[in-house]
Length: 241
Ligand code: UDP
View 1 (cartoon, protein in one colour):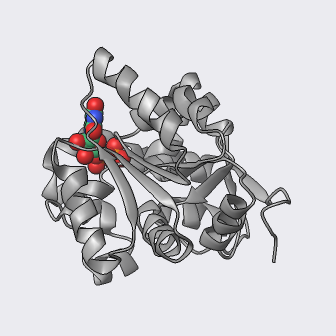
View 2 (view 1 turned 60 degrees about the vertical axis):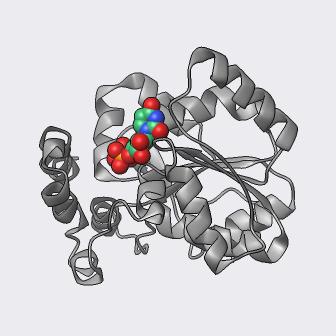
């Protein structure tokens, strides 16, 4: 198995890459133990299409150290290219890492979400792993509170920084602030705190197995329809490429 010291094999997908590995959690755990900082992007079809349209997003994602196949569309694309890779939703990767954090006594930061959401997510995680060390901060900072938060982060030097500001805001935020904690693992996780806090639900397992998580989300949040037009565009692009 490839370890954290070696570059991972990757497959180009439009303007970025996706890395291949049988166990991303293990790879990241090794990397954290070696004190190597990491920016993780969880790639889905919507983000892949954003990279086609916005050069700045493609640039920041290309600089990430680990790009994992979060979406069913990405996994199907890899199949078309002859690569068999399991889908790894970002929220599940983060859940595996939180279990590791409890074992290894890592310090974790939950940054993002509406006020109260990261706190509720923390409470729910502490019921599962009371020993977890989690610092929270909501994602609606003023310029002044942002400066205070940056100073706090620089002082904390946590092993894991989970950032939920939505795509692509979280990716830009991580790029701008990574120097504050160069040995940390930073992951953009969209709406994961909303799920952990219990205010949103993931699709039932059957829908996930049928690759219909996106449709469940569209039913829950119909105002996302415009963003989700990226999905048929992605299929068209993938077949064309
Ligand atoms: N959010 C935030 N600060 C902002 C904008 C958004 O903390 O300035 C949070 C928002 O409250 C929500 C999450 O970011 O919890 C975005 O979730 P979404 O499911 O929309 O993420 P995406 O689909 O973009 O990955």
